[in-house]
Structures are given as structure tokens and as C-alpha cells.
Length: 228
Image 1 (tube, rainbow, N blue to C red):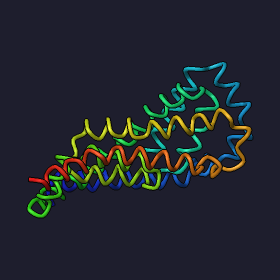
Image 2: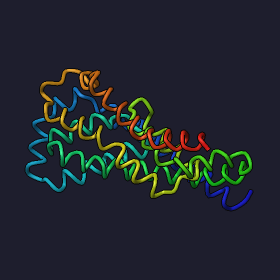
Image 3: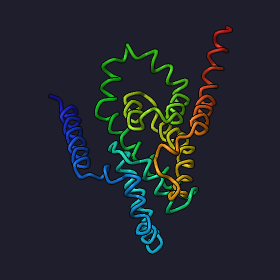
């Protein structure tokens, strides 16, 4: 077995061990709306007294949750809105989520992405060519529509030839609308009885319209190409 393959297997086992350990730690299960509301006053007090420490802890927790595909990112965003208000919370969420997603992307690319691209290079020619042309638009669409699991997009993108910088900016821009909406909802924490209350028809329509805007350049290119 080649040295590179052994390194990939070792890293995969380490990541799997960390994910299992974090799952067993119960971190994801603690990130619930009920727990957030129950400890709201303590969290606000700590944030007021140790603002920069609380921000650092918030961003680090967000990196761990998104990087290791743990549940609770939505609750963290609500907590951010409650503690830091909408705009600052959206910025902190963006830093944490984009960093965590990038780490997952890089891990997927190192462990399997490069191997897949080499192994199936001839079969992925058309697929890679399409991503070269419209990859950024596709990633934006996937980020903007909340039905696509966040962690699966990270892994899928890592298995392709999408450039790292493209992945980073599309992730950062694509999650911004949702971050603002959920952070604003977090400001109204006392009025939320269920996380599903946030997913109103208007909000879902807004996400779909944004996704259609991201898809529009692809459609225009296809139509222009079909005329010639």
C-alpha cells in the first residue's frame, strides 16, 4: 500500500473517531431551542461580561459543528442573534460556518477527491467541464435552497474540481441570507415556540427566488449556446 493511501486512511480514521467522539459527547443534543431558552439569561450575562471570549467560543463552536457535521447549527444561529443582534451575529455565523465548511471540503478532497478525479478522469470530462463553466452558480443554488444538507454540499464539492476560492466565496455568500433571517429570529427568541415557526412560506419563497437568480446565468448561457 502506498504511503499516500496510508496517510489518507489514517486521517479518515482520525476524523471518524472525532465525529464519533463528538456525537457521544452529546454536544449536538445540547443545542436545542429548549436549552437555549432555558439558559438565555446566563448566556447573555456571560456575553455582556466577556464579550470577546463569548464571540471566540461561539465561532469555534460553529466551526466544530459545521466541520464535523453535527446537528445544531440553526440553534447556534438563533443564539447568535439573541446575543449579538442580527448583523454581527450573521458575520460571526458566516466566519464560523464558512471555516467549518472549508475544513470539511479540504478533508473530503484530500481523502477521496483527488483519487476520484484521477481514477475516473475520462468519465468526468463533461462533468468537470460543466463545473468549470457554471460551478459557482451551482454551488450558490445549493447553498441558497435550505433543503440541501449543508454537510453533504461540503463533501460533494470536495470530491469535484471546484477551486477552493470558489467554494469559499459561494459558501460565504450563499449562507448569508439564511444567516440574517435566522439571526433576526434569534433576536425574538422569547417569541419562538418551535424552530419550524421560522420556516414560513414567505421565507421559503424568498430562498427559492434567490436560487432562481443564481440559476439565471446558467439558463442564459444554455439558451445562448442553443441558438448557435
